[in-house]
Length: 345
Ligand code: MRU
Picture 1: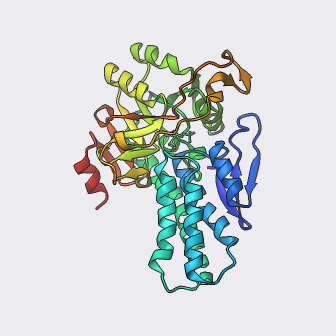
Picture 2: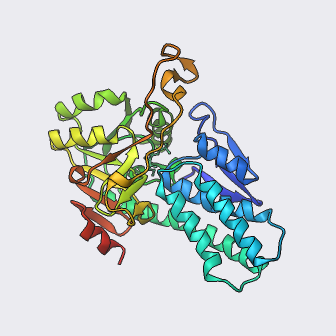
Picture 3: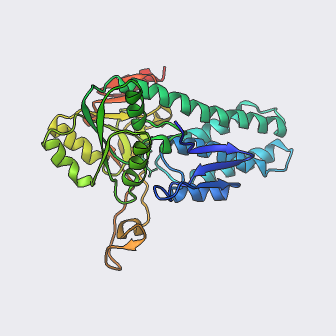
């Protein structure tokens, strides 16, 4: 897989600037937390697992600038950095789980010197980065077992290499199935308003030589009615303890359609995307984004001035519409709180 979505290079965070895809493959180097915050907010880097790695590297950027050797002062500054990074986007829990893992380094080493602690932070951040690479491949292998030769699959948004460190969750299933020499086709939903499906998934799957056909979001129903879809695989940004799963707006539409047309609907997500502290999807914070994303397409205004706009970035698919959640530890079929608790044991 040759898509280096996010890397730590010479003391800075190097990302593929996803705002420019598919027309230009450009890299963006973030040298401080402010630049990284802005890259997250404007979706230069996006996708739940990639945001986890970005948050961990963001902490490294922040602590580099702390000059004190006083632990109390350092710990206070660290808290500020984590709160700042956490204010970028609210829904993907990977970002908050990574920040909490980083903060734990300080909590678990109360007597370490600031210099020793900074080294431990680097090890932890690289651990989060490498763990994502590993679990994406495990999820891919677990999900690929579900794919039968000759099937047609559907996906929404971008849950691929660009949404993770380098391989993907839902698209990782496709990569793994291809590696196992299975033949299949993919319908990619364009994913309005920001077109992560058209711009990113179509680009990524084409680059990996997967047979992909782009559709507008509102074409999914007719394809399912015509029995042209065998299975749906999506990613997730936050999964509640009972299995309710938040993902890009439009995912819930697909899940309802899938139930009606008896098409299996799978969510593919690592354990770092679960939020076991919240019982149901009702407690998942949903990001509301700029109205301009709806009133314009690729920078061109398509709606009248002063129109009222509603622009939630994510929706929640209730657990009873989910056939299974594919994780690095296997597939949780008909997810519920009991099965998910067992996953974490
Ligand atoms: O707003 P985005 O582009 O960050 O939304 C991303 C998604 O909804 C992905 O499907 C999700 O993060 C899973 S990525 C493996």
